[in-house]
Length: 454
Ligand SMILES: Cc1ncc(COP(=O)(O)O)c(C=O)c1O
Image (cartoon, rainbow, N blue to C red; front, side, top):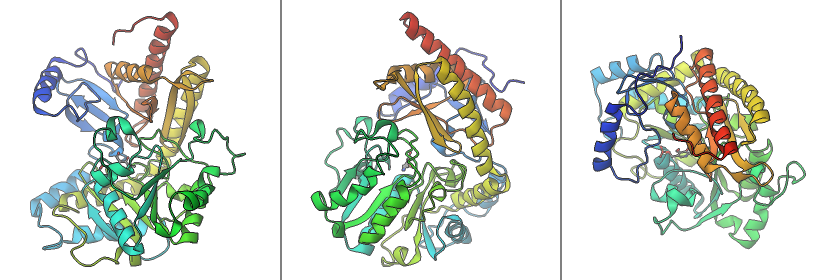
């Protein structure tokens, strides 16, 4: 039986009524990527307020790798809710926080003593990692990358790359932040090609230390092991290791932002494992909470312990409900083999996407690692002109046909897959056939120069 069930036009009347109320009550700056309002969700399926059922290929932007209501999470949540909701870990601690810290210390890459602080959002965790790095090294500069996304609070936003819609108008940004190109081989900032480039984008950092900021002023390099918002760019195998070597040479800390890549998405628990690199600090969020707001910084014990009591924390960081769902989520990922499942789903997508690429000139690049897969849409394969409008239309078509998709990339022209990894083969194939149908419609409209009414 098909997973998708559409009983009204999309959006239906109840979603439309809620959208009108939303418009009056919520600022425009909070985008609405999908026109339907959700009423319930399970596994990889969303049901909207009009009773339509969708396959969720966005997973709350990568927060639901273990699925909506993953096995064990709701039970853990109820069990914790029956006992207490909040005390503030800094005032009267509880075991869930400690257990989760122990668990993250154990499962993150790096065979050395670690400690973990829990926070509420990816941005907050990024900010804490930067604070700790600066305190530990007594240096102030941070190096980050083009196409990076690290969040929307002021320091995290200063590290984020994309100007529109994220940064423009929110100046001034924090000081001592230096940005260098990422290993984005499809759109290389140096117009080089791999492997002939010999990883110029990483080794050129030594030049940056001569011309832009002295190495001994740099506290940390913060990097996404695979770009998330930046377009699902998996760098060549030696990129991270080269950065790590440069860091070690100069006493700079390496911070890996695994907010989007973590918890099985790439086919391993953490993307750094693909690259054989154990960063000094690793930032996690999204799927960590299994749907509840939770983030973490896990790092070398001597680094994490550097600052004095009271210098780190927050009222709600490591909320007991979120700790309970996090522990159950990690259990589910391990017990249900979701890392291996991510790899299988990724391969299934790649087979379909490479076949589509033969028929649809719109598909410029297909890339990714494990279940973190994407296709970049271009108006012309030679010039690689981004097909931003076509990407928007494709997402709208897919939604009308029962599949929720989200875009990524500096030009908003990348379709990325962030489906719950518990999606069944049948649901996944159904979603792929909707994507194919939507590609056909967009490409046909392009061919005949027609305006498509979505
Ligand atoms: C890599 C990365 N870092 C940080 C963040 C910010 O996380 P949050 O939205 O929870 O603040 C995101 C969010 O998409 C992300 O993808």
